[in-house]
Length: 224
Length: 181
Image 1 (cartoon, rainbow over the protein chains, first blue to last red):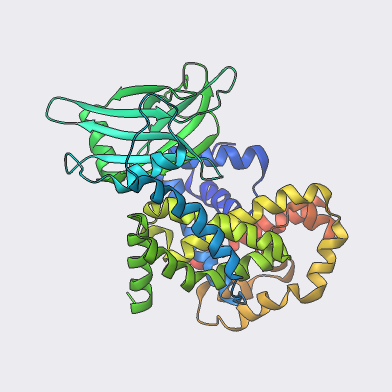
Image 2 (image 1 turned 45 degrees about the horizontal axis):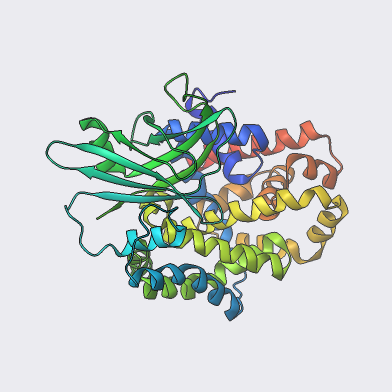
């Protein structure tokens, strides 16, 4: 059922946004979104088009407690970050990692990028950071207590603004760290789109060179 | 770009750089709309507030992913909100009876849809929706506003599953062609 032409893609994108695409079909479609910028744009088309239906929403101011809870969850890491210490050699505290990245005081070079891949509870899973200079083009991949999945690997993909996803390699499980070398082209794609995604693949990575498993997470890198 | 939209884009950009004050302004400006969306889709305050909280946590952490192709910042946030509400509805449905949907459709549930259609004469989507036959329009609205699956719509409307799937598919196909006219 892979979408293979414009109208078919459009129909699936519409059902995805409407919510009538379910289960495995929905997950497969999310993989196709990852592979195809055109499919992503078709989803965005329907999100924009359906938007006018939402003018009928009756606005209701939420209780102040909701903002207090949101604030408590996002503000906590910053106060820790201002203490300015780094627990080298230990499992990185999720909130501290995020805060250090957001508040890093002196970026060593203008074109470095950082990003945090999070789960649906906004808990950091991996911290990504470019390490580039004239002779090195690398992406540091730091796991933050990631639960491994038996017989599977997490694979990281660059999402160009147009064209298919480009594999960056496998992500470490647990609290592991690895460094992926980036080609000049990969670095250029990263500079332009800053978008990456993680799919769950058979052990060793996608056999096809394109995502084959469910797309679990997406991240947009921040320029430092 | 209107002044209001420009301000929203600015707040989103500042939020993506970790500016908490801008995020609070963004929350203040948009949360009544998002809360209204959650209440409409979920039908109870407790879940609506829980989902609202998760929406803004996601906005805070992913503001850098916003770009104009996603529509206005509010459009992008409403999309996040709808997908979050749909997730809750899918989890909840295991325990929910079809009659609940019938009740929610009978009681006040249709009013926002009618209000949306009545106040949106200038919009292409509304024009195209009006051109749709009643079953096609109703099935699309039930899915969009209430997050109903094909099966739930079929049971709620007392129609065969294949008929409802066809209504949705043909309705969306008509909308696409109508919107491109």
